[in-house]
Length: 365
Ligand SMILES: [Mg+2]
Image: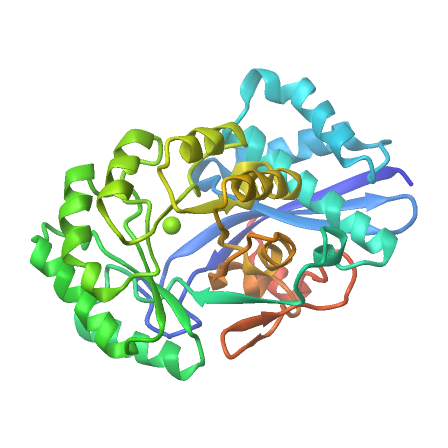
C-alpha cells in the first residue's frame, strides 16, 4: 500500500457548551485543521490538529508540506515516516510548535489507515485492554460563570449521568482565596460528595498561592488539581505536589516525550496528562503512557475524547478521558457515553467519519 495524496481544510467550530448549555462565551469558535490521507488501495485515514490559533494558516501549510513528503510511502511503516518527517523538518524547526502539531495529524491518520487496513479498531490494535472507559464532563463549570450558573450547570451534568466532572479556579478579576473556596463549595454542594471533581488552574497561580488555596480546598476532596503553576516550572509544581494531599495533574502543555521524563522525575505530578497533538500523535502518546506506567503513575487525556478514548482504553494505566465536546460535531457520530462511561466500537481504525454537512458549514479555508 502506498500513500497517494492528501486534502486539508481549516474549520472554525463553535465551542458552545453542549453538555450543560451554560457557555462561558456563546460566540467563541475554535480553529481546526482537518486531514484526509489517501492511499492507492482506496483506504483513507482522517485526522485533525489544533492550537494554530492566529497561525492556523501556517499550521495547515505545515500539514500540507509534511503530507507531501509522505506520498509514495507505505502507510503501515509509521515509525519510518515519523523519522523521515523529523529528519526533513523537525530537527531544525522542531521539536514542538507547529512542526509537532502538523506531524501529529499525519501520525493519527496513519494509525487510522492501519486500523482500517487490518480491520481492527484502534483500541484493539494498541492492546485492547478495555472496551469501555470512564470519562469526565469538561468545558462546562468554567471560571467565567457566576456561582449560580455554575451550580445550575453542575446539576445538569449530574442529571445527564456524569459521575466525574471538571471545574476551574483562578477566577477572573482579583479574587481573594476565600472567593476561590466559595466557588469550590458551590460546585461540591451542587454535585454531592460522591461525584469525582477535578479542578483546572491553567497555570495561573504561583507555587505559594497554589499551596495556600490548595490547602484551603482539601476539604472538598478533589480528584485532582491541574496545572497549578507554569507548565515548565517542574520544581515549583513539585513543591505544590509535596505540600498537598490532593493529587496534582499536569502535562497537557508540554511537547514531545522528553519533558514528561523531567516532569515525572521531578515528582511534579501524580497524574500524567498527555495531549495527543502536542506530544506527537498516537505513537508518542502511547510511549509516554508506558513511561508513566513504569513510574506507577496513571495517564489521562486532554481534549478530543473521540480519539483519546482508544488510547486511554488501551493503556494499562489509563485512568479517565476528558469528555471535552469541542470536536464531536465534526463527525457523523462518536462513541456513546452511558452513565458517564464511553463505550468503544468495533469499527476499524478511529471508527469516525467526518460529517459532510458540518465540515461544509464550519469550513473557512
Ligand atoms: Mg487543563
